Length: 383
Ligand code: GLA
Image (cartoon, helix red, strand yellow):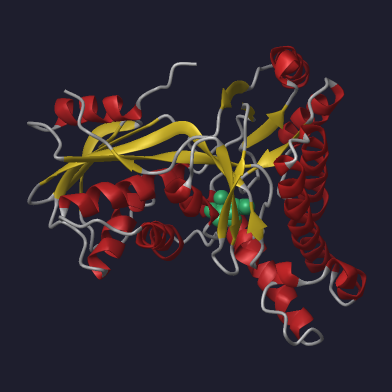
C-alpha cells in the first residue's frame, strides 16, 4: 500500500489558504491498541501500535491565530483565551494553552492541519492532532520539548482543556512509537518496552462514530474510581484498580454493586490478558494472541459495556471465518475493530467478514491494513 502523505496535504492546504509557505511542520500517528482497553486510567498496562496513518500540522508565525483543516477548509480566526467552541479547533487551542504554561508557545500562528487518521473511529485522531500541534507550535517558538513534555502537553490539552478524561496511552504511543513494534506501557510506573510486531493489522471501521465529549468515557472512569474507593476499605494499600490481584477478584466482586463489579472484573482480567499477550506475541504465537483479543472483546461487551452490535458482528464473523482473533479497539461505543489473520488468507477473511456485515447491515465497513509505524516526527516542508 502506498503511504498517504498528510504532510503534502497540509502543506498544500496551507499554501492555498495563507500567503507564503509554513515555517514548521510535524506529523504524529493515530494508534490501534492491540490489547489493554480502559486499563490506562486504572494504573494497568497497555499494548498499542502506531498506525501508518498520520496527522500533520504545519504553521508559520502570525499576529493572530488562524486555523484551517482538511475536514473544515474555511479558515477560522480563533481566540485562545475565550471559552472553547466545541469544535476541532479546541484540540489546538488546548495545546496552545498548555504550551503557554511552560513558555513554549508562539504569540500567534497560521496553522493548517491534514489527517489520514479517521475521526471518531477509536484510532486516536485526537492524540495525533495534539501531539503534532505541540511539536510544530513549540518548534515555531524556538523550543524542542522532551518526549515526556510532549506527552504531558498533549494529554493535558485533551484531559484538562477539552475535558475527556482518558489515560495517557494515546499520547504516549503517538510520541514513543518505533516502527515494527508494539509498545508495552506500564501506566503506573511509566515504564515502556517495545515488543516486535511483525505483519499487518487489519482495521474494520464500524461506521458508528463515537463522540467521547458525550461523556461515556468520563462516566466509566468515575465508576472505576468509585470501585477503587470501595475496595480500598478492605485492600488498604491498593493504589490502582488494575493492581488488584486476580486471585482476590471473587472477594472483591462480592462486595461491589453489579455495575462496579463488572467494571472491576474487566480491568483486572484485561490486565492479566495484556501480560499474557506480551508473552505470546514475543513468542510469535499469533493464534494464542488472537484468542486473547476475543476474550478481551467479550469482556468489553459484557462487563465494560463499551461495545456496539456492529463491532460484535465483525468480531464474531472474523472468528467464524478463520481470523486468529479480533476485538473492538480504543474507547468504544462505536469506532473500529482490529483483526489479526494468517497472512496467506487475510484477504479472503477480510472479504468474508465484509460480506457478513453487508448481509446484516446493508453496507460494507471500510477496511484497511497497517504495519506498526513510528511516532511523532518533525517534517521538512515539501517544495
Ligand atoms: C481513549 C483514551 C485512552 C484509553 C482508551 C481506552 O482512547 O484516550 O487513554 O483510556 O480510550 O482504552
